[in-house]
Image 1 (tube, rainbow, N blue to C red):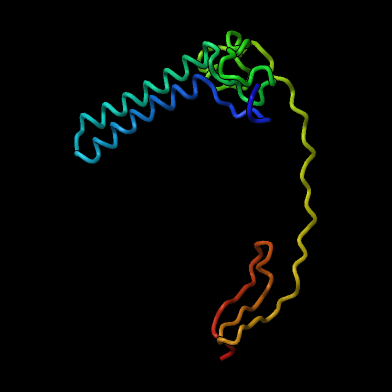
Image 2: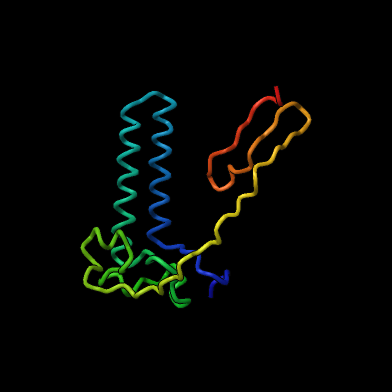
Length: 153
């Protein structure tokens, strides 16, 4: 049973990739501090290795598909049963050539967002007593007409 009432997405692929990437980033940090190009390159190679290991673990079922998993699959010890076919909305699966034959579940179309038209008040003169005035409140809504300058001359 999970301690948390929600799926945090912790997976073997995720933790392994983060651990390897941390080592690679640390090696790159040492390379920056010691001005060592070989250490920078080695750190970069380790980070690319982290990416490839994470991808391979995801494809073998130890990763998390996009979206919320069923509660029975929240544990890190549970492999993803749909990894072989690929996940429909997963970039990693598409890069591996998986998930292309499956049709993603259609998402309900959201209603178009309509906003009421902006009502722009008539031009006004605003002053804060410092001699700076703003003429034209028509700037609201992106329309031209605001004039900022010293008070009336």
